[in-house]
Length: 261
Image (cartoon, rainbow, N blue to C red; front, side):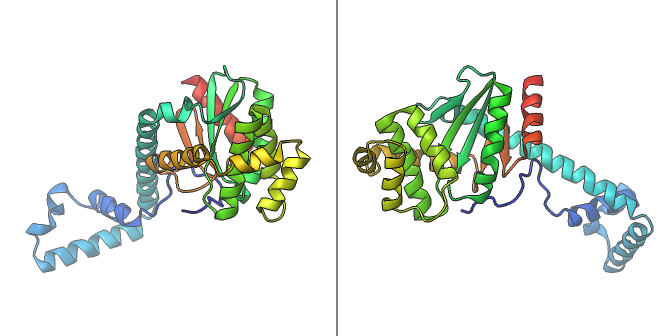
């Protein structure tokens, strides 16, 4: 399980050359001739040579076929994501253990699976903040999803403990501080951060080890597994899943799409 250190992919871009060749063959010969099981070795070789010759003479066919196949793959992935989101809607959108920011009554909900050590989570943070502030009608949910090692786990435990001890405003302060934190995340560093944020440092540090904190992180990991989420950041924007960093303008476009549906 790794961080998604690349721009978001809203549609799959897997290699489809082999499928394109097969589809090109369908364009190059009558349907009856495509039953290779009924061809002799010589007929099969001749057919292959004819298809190759046709595609070399008409390379635009491959471009067209690849485009169609990529579009079909993208549509299938969107449909699969939508089904997974529907099956897990309550855990995504209504779990009381998750912090809710933005406009709690907003007409579009954004859920972010975040790891504080993820460079693309850090890059996305100010753009997510701007989106929420400028829109005014977005409900924003954070799912702590530490996947980059023990320092990530410590950071998530600290944020969740701050909420448990100090409340929702403290969680937001901890979240913002951790996503911009420079240096190693250690118990000592978190103790200093708690003091800087005017938290009850002793209570927060003790709460970090509570079974309730462990349960929240475990539940988020299980939810991510059910949604086939393997990297951060991953966003759920309304009824769409976005795996990876998404620039502000594209996030705004997805939100507009969700409102139009």
